[in-house]
Length: 215
Image (cartoon, rainbow, N blue to C red; front, side, top):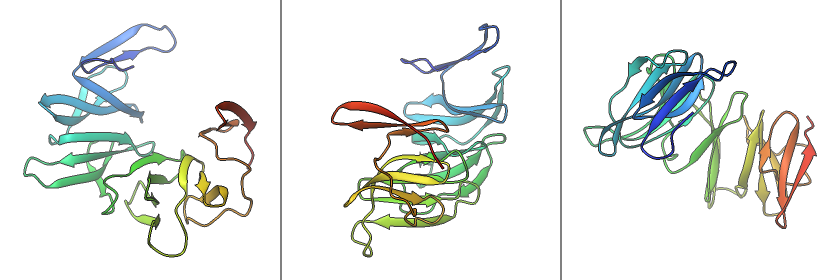
């Protein structure tokens, strides 16, 4: 649980609903492998990436401070952090949530893209001008589609889930293979906003509908 004003995070026992710990200054971003990973207030606009024990809230590791830092979950054991290092150089890295150690640098050119983990094995990054996929363990760029490069136009991504990238292309809804970028054999009837193992949510003409998930 994360506070909404000045950063503060809380650990709550889901069985008893008891408050287990409070961590002022911590903006929690990701939870996994018994660790909470987030950004801890430091100097103005210069937080530290940290990992705290999920059960106790005690700090387990702290990385170097990052100016204008942004952090997002990138897999069950990985977070992505971007910003500027103390020496002024840019940083866009994948960190191990258990240790804070560097897993890999993100591929160049993806700094302005927001990335979403597909809950399987792929990090899908998208912007208005393109879409790309990255292996969250190795940092390897798997594929990329960008405006003005090649014959294929990148879709506007709406959701990613278990190896599929959903979006809207020039000819309507599309689904891509998250690992290869290839069009899936069956074109979807709509582009869902959210997908899980049970259903996909679709917004059409301000009407929200739910469809059973398949495949």
